[in-house]
Image (cartoon, rainbow, N blue to C red; front, side):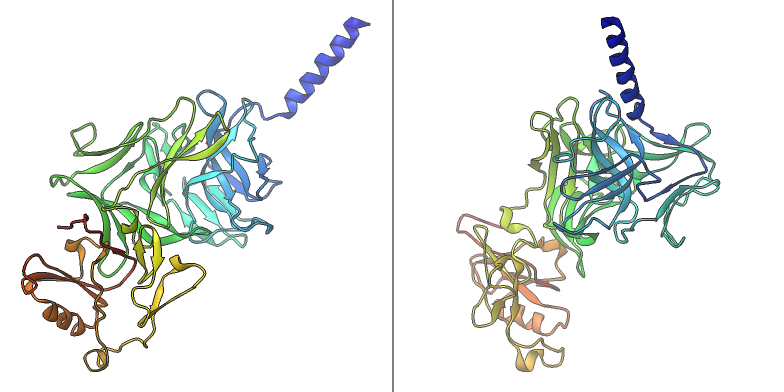
Length: 443
């Protein structure tokens, strides 16, 4: 009887093992189609906050347990109580058990690190296809092409999600034809580079994944963060000697700018090292911060591990910290002048301010408008990315230059001992300002 009972238990365990997802599935061949439905992608998970992951490809963590990379359809729910309906086709970090089952549904919310359709999320019934001619295509439920990798006819023989999170289309010789690492969205993962010509672009807002105005780019003389304006306004720069081949590489423990692959470091930002068996990534967010996130195995959750950018002189130097025309003082927001500006939302002062007078037309600027002077107030934009610069002028001439230029919205006047021998920086748009403290000196 005891022997029979043991056989019965063993048989039950085998049945449970057969029902689980026993292996990862990191590759696909042409022609393969994945529909964004629970029925088509049986490895789907609904999280306790309403988020949804539908995995098409999955690469288990090298330890065969923990945070892993998946390619598929992901919906991150930002509206509590509402069904998750806007899906991104992309790569996300999901937490998996040793049988390739996506678990940790309370704290392991999928972290999307690359997406094909950030500006046009799709709903149920959309399809992704690795076509017979080797292209990766996203289609709406009605069949309209929303995005394509542009790899058709280039000899693609397969697709893989790698252990570093890179989605790769490869040919018969295993050479890379197309890879997601070359097309970053708002995130870098360890091992990924940011080359000249590419950008990290933040989301428009917390719950809007389309491209916003904040971006990070590499030039031949600096790694810099900007607000997209006319011209772009720069709020952070990591400078180095001019080098036409410079690019940024995110490695374990640093964000380094190199002169060439495997070459000399031009500049480096030190970062916390990545713990063994976990995943770390950095994301440029809508508030201008480039934040570092890491999965903490001891708490089974994602945590902020650091802030990569450090604009001078501090957090008040971020361009949207207090909204347009808002003044930041010790991280408190206010309007610059009560007689001429009012808060957009008095309950949320970080939403910014608006002028109380009607907007000026180009013809009326000199006749009916004036510039309001704000003493001991600074603006984040680097002087060399201002709209226009005048040297060795006084305050009156600086004001006149702005009033006479239809594109000018503010003039920043900086002088030393002689107020008639200063520098005038004209700005085409006014975002957040900051109060200058006596100990804060700017060049």
